[in-house]
Image (tube, rainbow, N blue to C red; front, side):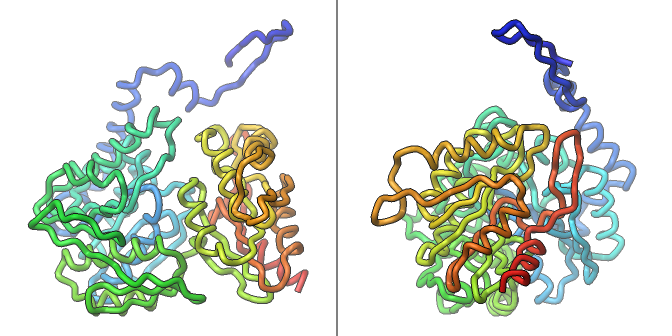
Length: 447
């Protein structure tokens, strides 16, 4: 319990959770030892399943696109006839068996990962594809795993308050590359690529959409050309092969290039990659089109400024009614007005709503987003007028209202939670949730 004195003489009491107390009062070296100890214990219990060369383990890290890249890689390996296991924020997969990731953790805890690796090893999987996060690395969840290949998608500010700085956040990501000595896959269009290029590996594969001066003479760089956004996906050309994805957005071309690079690194023909990628549909809650008519409804996990702008840019030529909040109460408060500013630039109408407030006051979160909408900045509209906006804290009501407001031919964009199965409230309380189901129910009731 923390006691503080307010200016009016009253005493304010704040009940802190065990985690908050530990972070505030326990020395950092002790916390690191604690996390490392659990990682070691998990590996010991399951007999170090992730070590040795019996399985090729691929780690995918970055800010955005990790889940889709894991999915694309997995599909290509499946198409090639290899037995593969994977973990992403969406699902677990071992061979033909798949199940939902309900942990609300992109990279689950050490015991979960080590148990999964043991199961994959027993199932005689040749490849393991893992989504690797900065928080997971900081807590040593990547330890006692011999990564054969590391993939870098992109980097933008996230978890800055948790890590202390963007540089610290980036350095955690770099640890995966420093620990991986065989294959590195790097998006050289990202301004942070130079840090990942400074790590060493036996094989380096680079990709991007923008022509650059070749600084690594012995390394081939894959350059996607003729990127075209279409009504039912996105197409691009890579050397002599044309690809047509069923997923939306230029950012999915980057995800596809990362997956093709992995395939090439393991000797898989581009024709196999093309076949697998062209069959792939959007994964749950990632640019997922819940409905196409009479209004289009899209649900996406976007919760950082770069992610949100990428989603809005995909539909910038259409009139958008946008539902957004700010993911994770108590964290990354800096981005809240920025999210509001981005929505102001692209959306016809904005509904600000609750997301995962945890122990923070939901109204204070949405007010910080609204602060950007009330300011006098330029917008994406020719007349310079700010879009209409309203606050509806009840997220279900916010989604229902957006769909009621939408006219035929317009787009409702619901961001922040994607396919997450829970909403996290104060005192560690969780309630079942699904933005997609709520949107479908609202559509049935209104059309």
